[in-house]
Image (tube, rainbow, N blue to C red; front, side, top):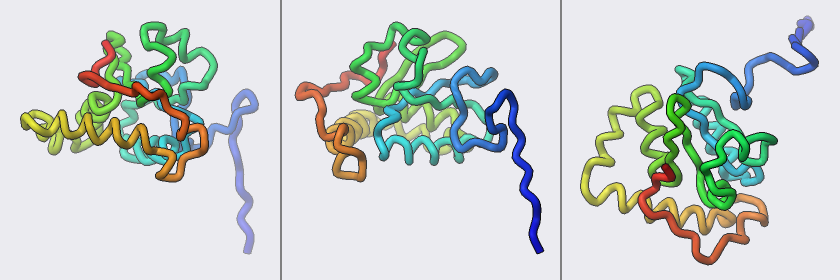
Length: 161
């Protein structure tokens, strides 16, 4: 027996369930901007989209047209260095470990573990681990472009604004 598959399209775009939301979707509390060329980052945001059952996140690659114009306060270099999380209500922006902390709070049941960031040594430890991972992500299955990183890659408090 065969079953006919129906695909719905709107204005030439497939409207079946997407793994990652597209730019401009309304009603999202946060916009997550990641390096769309990074294979590791791509796997992470697909996982993040699955965890986002309440659809609070808009997830977009930094290379998408209009991203830099939409968030002009984020330096271009920051997009290559770390994930950026922007609260849509006021534009407050987090990067690196600060972005991870904010995302954990936004996800269902995330508040159950977000308290860990209040422990004095945890935030600096997560910042250090994030910096190490960002410098070495080419070793975790990313493309060659990730092995070319700025020598002075540094994140101070993880908060870009």
